[in-house]
Image 1 (cartoon, helix red, strand yellow):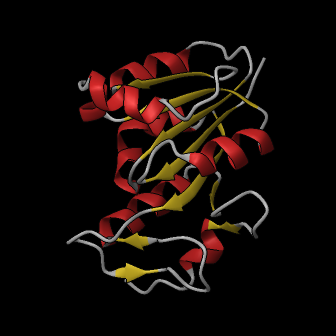
Image 2 (cartoon, one colour):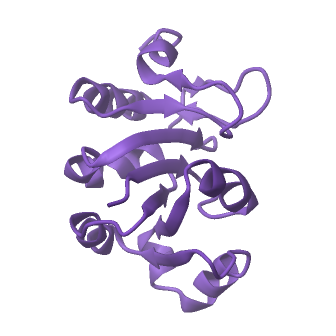
Length: 165
């Protein structure tokens, strides 16, 4: 039986996911979660072009992702969604994840906190993002900010100390 992981990355599936994360986590299946992308076969095919055939991969809606989470994993799975607020739709499913990795979250009109320090990733949070991540962490979900597997991982409680609401 495999393990489930989730990564927040506004780019969804890209080279870093395939070359670094999938190898480090021994991933067999990649699941991009995005309602709009799931409804656009042309964009899906473009996104999936760079994924080697040895990975099972697909783009699904949030509802379809819940169904996949409910199925036992044959190997390790990596779910990828764009923004921290996307996690609200997957609250129950996140408890099945070994780790939720906070990767890249681009600047948006509602973001107030820039946690992009020391190079590496792009990490912007809105006050709502922070509150949601606090709730998820308090419920026992392991949240870790980490750009790539060979860089230091910052657990959410540690990262949270630098944010003043």
